[in-house]
Image 1 (tube, rainbow, N blue to C red):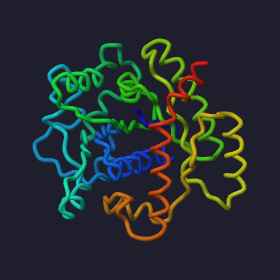
Image 2: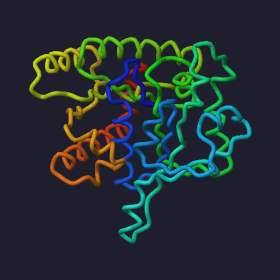
Image 3: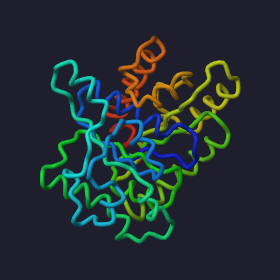
Length: 275
């Protein structure tokens, strides 16, 4: 599942990390592919690289790339190990600025398949035992995002309840439809996450109602409110499910519900989307 937005600053990586935290808490074997050259998801997942290739290096040599040999366990697993239990799987294909050489608008079909080739090779050799793969995309429709979409069956869109973000989400849905027609016929939206919602904002309330009218069943529940300590949690490279306090506990419950919605309700949404 690609996690995408045409507009930067809407909390796309925060949603990726929240879903990864929920998957870890649920014991779902998960891989996070950090395709954004800023590599913020890699930082937030407390990755300590050794000699592994990052995702950009693997993409360059996609036919020979060994995903299983180059994924890195998230540092979030340390708390599970300290408890003496067997930690679930949360692996990371590290991001880096190197992947930016592919973030251009002129990639051909062969290049768009590079990430899909890496994942399919890992499936064949049994080195990818994941139930969920989250791909954190750059905030653009250039090569890396389209490469991620080619490798995905779903696209989860992240938007703030603001004018420009809502308009960007409309454009992204149109882009998905065009892309699936030409390149990826099985690709469908996983839904739209309204993120950084301010409950006391009349503008946000208006835009949320507008999004419900515009996007219907694609607008996922729950929405994710703006959280004051989110920067602190991410700065500590810590899963929200293991952060103390009622605010983090409430946020964890929301991401649990969001993950459940994404995993268990998409078959219905896909049928609705396909008409």
